[in-house]
Image 1 (tube, one colour):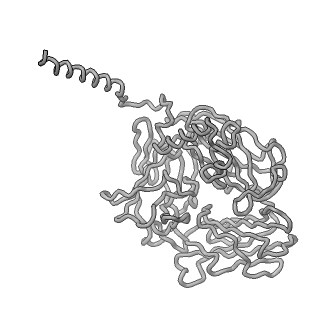
Image 2: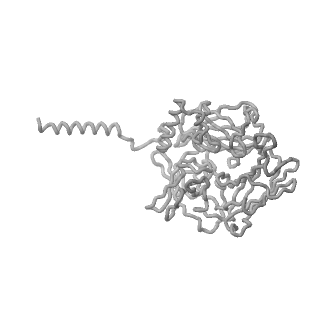
Length: 473
């Protein structure tokens, strides 16, 4: 009996091991059409964040003080739930347009976004009027909105003919429920189940009451030391028939390059005043790095390798697209190529409705570089990142291969992008480190002019204009 005891113990252990293997056995082949767990396509960090938010929402732990914190409500373009993807806001029918409306002009903005949870959610929305610095203006809702103060998003469609299932939501505004009565900056808030504390996304847009004209030009920098790599943006404001008592204190002017806000020039003062003109022809205060033309890749059709696509594979029910490995351009001479100035176009070839028929792909980015850039991080950057520095687009340096890499989930389409260096403890990215900077680069500039009249508590948006390099307006 003493000799048989080890045999029984061995058989007992083998039976436990067999049971463990059966319970934990994984299916080596996954049919994506049958996948119902959206967490399969999230990182561990995203899953943890989503579970934490859902637990807080159920327990009522999200309080008003937390809601105003940066972790919850941000007065910028931001996505709060990892299952919300591909948000877009543009003028109806013009997917590459700037999200700007003019008072009483009859046009609408379109909001589009996808929910990867694949189960219908009730989403509500409302608006916050903001001042020029994107802080709440203090106006009561009835002072800037005519109609209902909030409403539901009722237009949704399930994805069609895609490996990756999702629900696509659409909103058009102003509409029969909501109209805007004041000019200025606006923040669109979308949230779950009519609960403003459970935000899913916020979008910035503008309502203009055009009271003045802006004549602008973009040229090579005047100062010799900046001439080869910076662009000078000169402009003149004409306010005929629109009185401005103190242009130095009553006006705020913002100039942005290619829809970026991290490097925008803010609160410029007139260099000269010659009524009715305000002249902003500086030589240093209004210059930008010219940077470089944006890189691009095309995934509108996944049946073949299109421009700048190195390979396409389907693994575990997901489509992986490998972007052609990139090289730094900081020491390469300028070469012109047409681009979208960092924008993107969601599109699937041979589809009737790309918003619900375009598939999701895992895009693999590779940047070759002999050494890691010190004192900061490299990000993939552009409209595909909301012009923000997002964690999922932060690149990791692989020393053994001398390259940066990252993988991100994006929707089918045509994309512009750039590699931008973000120094530690900074919110302003530097595109020149990897991409180089040239005064000849074609860029787009946007002008926003705000006026706070005497005795008012909000900033009117009284001027808007845009210009491309090489043209005068």
